[in-house]
Image (cartoon, rainbow, N blue to C red):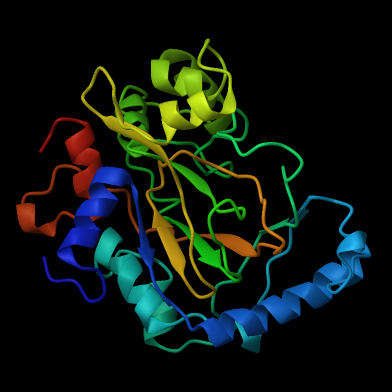
Length: 304
């Protein structure tokens, strides 16, 4: 297939691991302008001061607001849009028409988990809590169009152990195979709870079944090696880092969780969806018309 932004290797990474980073999907300068805007909003809403860490009493704030405006509209770049369609298929993303026509009705940016120093008082570890895939607003099927991709948009520098999102590489395949057994679909909470109890690696990861308990052993168990499950899916926890303006494009079925912020920097990011016009088509007549997103699901189901 012909792509506009992502390389063949990046497409393969997305299909195999469930995520890929688009460096400078919008510029660092644009991202930092948005961060300044966000700091002003957070200061107003939560009585914190940007230049006074003593005021950062809450370690993590969920600023559940979505924004539009000149600062954010210019972040809706063609590079970002083309990278998204490299994965979901050209013309299949509902909002891309807005980009092509330079429409004033751009999508909003939000919500914002603002990580001041979450977990800084504890040793770095792989959490048992917080693991999920997204989509509380719809009923889940293996071919659901509602999510498209999960886009993690960075508006601050995120280094190692600085609050970067943790992703469970390969878990998108586990979820795809699981959802294929639910022809009538399943709600997100019930799906996550059921799969966590059913899948041995996820059960250990989320603390439902016994696993190594000390910090280093848990890091070794889940981050420093791949585990191959009974279906042959390779699983590993990875910490996602990046710079302002980077966007992490994640498979809609990818398990992820917040991590600890041991740095002295506040982490700003938001989550965006890329809803599709139609359901995924997992049985196309023309092999060449499968998107990488569809191919990844087909592989998990043993169709490719």
